Length: 424
Ligand SMILES: Cc1cc2nc3c(=O)[nH]c(=O)nc-3n(C[C@H](O)[C@H](O)[C@H](O)COP(=O)(O)OP(=O)(O)OC[C@H]3O[C@@H](n4cnc5c(N)ncnc54)[C@H](O)[C@@H]3O)c2cc1C
View 1: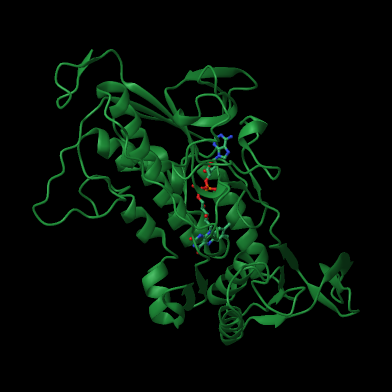
View 2 (view 1 turned 45 degrees about the vertical axis):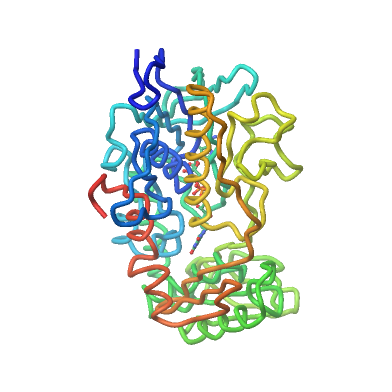
């Protein structure tokens, strides 16, 4: 039995059980911010308290279970560099057991896949990795869906264990290093631009060509033209060959004049070129939400959240179910900063719900506002940034501010304080 120090007189029979599906930016942020709030602390991703300010927060016992298909936190936004540099690949994936902030008796990380969620009964089924097809049930009081998008290779590694992932990345990097005819990256969205620029940065001898079917890069993003034009200039400055208005028709496997296997790449305008590797960076990412009821989803599979991040009101126990990060149907370009921010909001709103349950106090929810299009894009040694108030900026200083010197790994790690309570 637990006695809440603040809600004196209320006895809580068992800890509140929180299930977080997905242990990446959104899921870890939700779990750790909730842990802070339930310990009476300022939430780590919330506004910094003023000097000497102390906000009284009721403390509650919580038991947080995070389920992820991977065996560690994978810094997804570092993928373009992780698939170009073996030393960076080592840094980019940290097993959950090696993340100090998660080493707490009330945080449990399970390596497996959530297969279904019964909102009515508040029970999820999951299959443990390596456990065959046997399913287990997890009962919960509050659920946070933070399962992101399913992305194809070679946009992101497909391995689910760190060890395998290092082989996967290593094989890919070594194949590119020996490429005589170069590497072609198809798709001039944010991912294709970063992939091409990182590869060229790490392997300057390599011929890297980015091809895009439209006459502007980032053509499907609602960004001003100067951002798109500057991205193209930076790519060219980084010595990436860029072919605009080139739509891929097909790739044909052939032998080159030395009898080595390579590809002839055909474009619909009749142009052809040789390449040793052709990487597709055309977005075909779909939300990983097949474990949720169709009623909670739009026709593309995104969760139709309310501004409080709660599930749609016409689904069972909607106020106890939250979705955050890339899986939600909301305005704005999908970004890891938004995922961490939503994790903090979901944590706050769950804490408020618990408070209501324990003491009857009316909850004060944090609610999402419209998110305008904004972006920070790494292009080799420089970066381009845009948000409506500040407009477009670019340069090495923008790279430093948005990505540090490791494509944002340390910035995200520190923001979520994954190194432990006192490690910033
Ligand atoms: C190559 C690339 C570059 C990017 N660059 C940037 C950038 O520079 N800046 C930026 O802000 N954003 C960038 N993004 C976007 C950013 O990565 C996403 O917005 C962010 O990852 C979203 O975080 P998330 O926690 O919602 O989901 P994810 O990071 O996708 O995490 C979802 C987690 O859920 C797990 N999972 C999925 N389904 C299940 C299931 N059924 N059961 C258990 N676990 C499950 C997955 O294994 C994964 O760990 C980039 C994305 C890519 C692909």
